[in-house]
Image 1 (cartoon, rainbow, N blue to C red):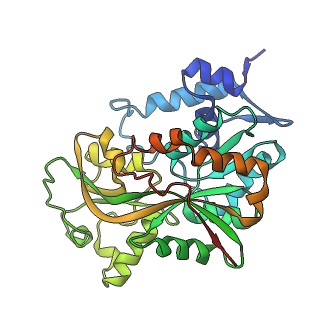
Image 2 (cartoon, rainbow, N blue to C red):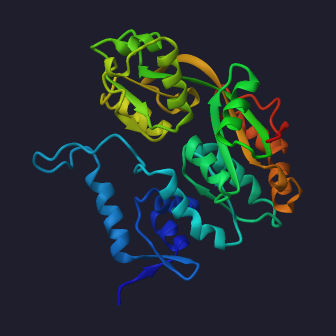
Length: 326
């Protein structure tokens, strides 16, 4: 009989966290089977994942097969994302949707220290899809990242995507958004306008990402033609895949959270704007005991200090709550 593993057993075999196994399943990278309310992974499904990971390593391309696209998460729509999280709503956990995996991981680690907190499951979705899912109450919280040179700018973007909803928006941190370029900036990329140059290969973020929304608005404001930017329609789905593309010379530039570049000494930043990282949920959840524990974790000294590990993050106002009346 074929071996069947739990998520924890797979995590132990791969020497990763259990939460990472669930994220691989939600991304579609690791196939799994739902049995009742439980998730199980067969030996065949695990072998398929391991073989796929091996095939993606440099030097393992067979014959003249085209290279694997620069993307670490398969694309999906808001509707399919909602279907993926439907089964989670039948569990006792809370669902947070976000592409900011590092901050979600910090929050999960803080919650793990409190035995009274409910499990929190992370669904990987961009800002548009996260708020879409929250609007239809398919998830409980969204961690969003929008352009915000002034605080009201991010709040207005959230409000526009959640019409008629009364919301609580908890500030997490401000961060720097910018372009990722090679060390020494050999292509002399200094601004968004440089992306229009014919010698620049750009890798964009997917529609619905806060970074793509920002870049699209910059192009519209300056009357730039998207088709003039080589690679504008090529998309990746995370900061890591954006940085990897530039580091591997698959692109000359990409866009994302500049704090990630601390892990990429071969890259350097071209700062563009300030973004606001916010935790969004329905105002009616404020009296929920599980949400109260989450807010307690966000306001804890340990969580705020952990944010300092990300270059440019400032936890001074972390935990400040703004109410948006629909």
